[in-house]
Length: 120
Image (cartoon, rainbow, N blue to C red; front, side, top):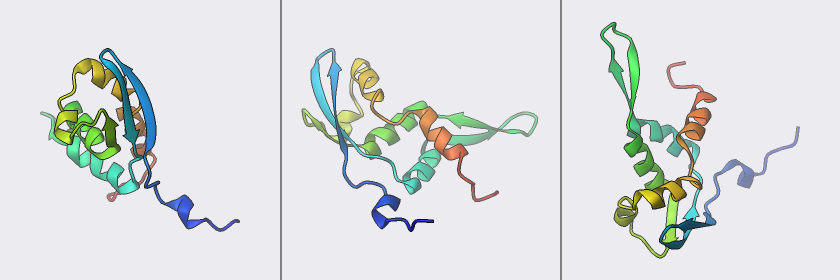
């Protein structure tokens, strides 16, 4: 078996440039990948467990918390330049276009379902 190259084992430090069309004009967004640790940490930011009446735990998902986590951790910069606070206050129409280039909830959950948890 071939020995791995260290650069192949770590997440890229550089962000990918994307141009999106919003109803208000063009926006350039630099998006970076989440590291393995950031993906693990993500769940603590927007998923909590709630006990049902029968004692069965069920997940409670905060989708606003999910998108906040993704915007803060994946968007490196934008043009026109937006601060993190401004990014968290974008219009819904802009958010819909931005969501097309950001990690989705499903892709994050899929990557989590393939990993062993600390209790397994």
